[in-house]
Length: 278
Image 1 (tube, one colour):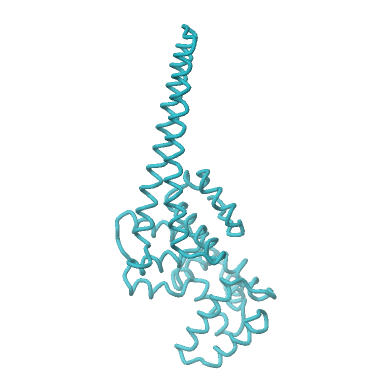
Image 2 (spheres, helix red, strand yellow):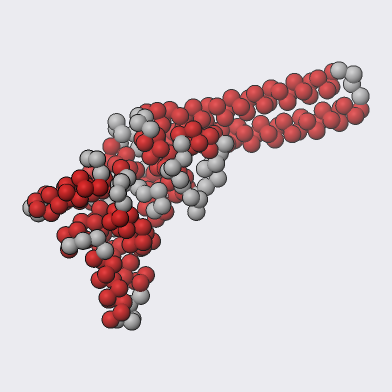
């Protein structure tokens, strides 16, 4: 699986897209590449319309490139055949003509495929008319291949997300785990329980624990392992939380307020104030 780096600058991401860096990926990885791209655009305070327009222009640019190459190669053939013609130049002209046709077909094929898939994708997640689909797109994490595959299946079949489905996934697995851990006392509580369980019952493996937990809070067992190894320590030790982590903690606060645990909600405020400028 390709590493989707959201630390790329806006310019770096655009260059990668223009040179087909993500176009040879599997369908679900392409979805994650779209999600990464929107995260980069969003970090640069750009509108979603800007992101959609960039991808539509990309296909048009590729088409223009194909026609330009075709015109240049055609003129080259004409020049070869008409200026001091000879058997050697006829042979060279045929060779260049064949190459030009193949190049034109490849470029135009990619351009048309890109335009078609781009139009289908952005129509499916149009926030003005498909807000549930757009919310489901925003809920994707850039390393969650399983959720991306499920999203692509809905896109391919034209199955729109319903409002109740979006409510179910509103709190992703990271938010759910954070809420459980903070309610139990502190970050790392679940990992401590996991280690205690593994030591007391040798029939239970680490991966089995992760799968059970993933079935309860959503996501994949790989995502659960990522939470234990990266996200929980990052939030516990970091002095400057990322915007995404702040957003997740604010959602945890919402869960506590809705559950009537206002003291826990205040703890979240204190936690964020201590580590950020919020």
